[in-house]
Image (cartoon, rainbow, N blue to C red; front, side):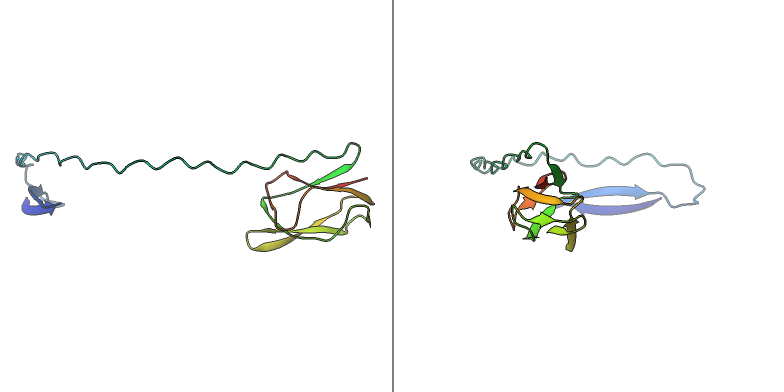
Length: 134
């Protein structure tokens, strides 16, 4: 056994450490000095709770149209169509930036844009409505 003095937060402790592979019997534990509990620190006055900004209400799709939803959370950095415009299947509707990558959101069908549910610069979650096509 080896004896060490360890100081933690200004308080010294005597410790015994057994060496690996030593054939000696374990030694009796050494008593450590009683440590007084530290004086409680006065808590800082609690700050007033901050309310989270209210989430934007979910936009409802126009009935009868094909809804195009966000495949992942991110930010809309560009909207390439306008309401009333005709689009073909595969046309780029908007650009969604997620994880530092720009993702083209393409039209799944040909038709006319009847609703644009987001604005450029808006943050969206996975499954949020982006565009409705008839």
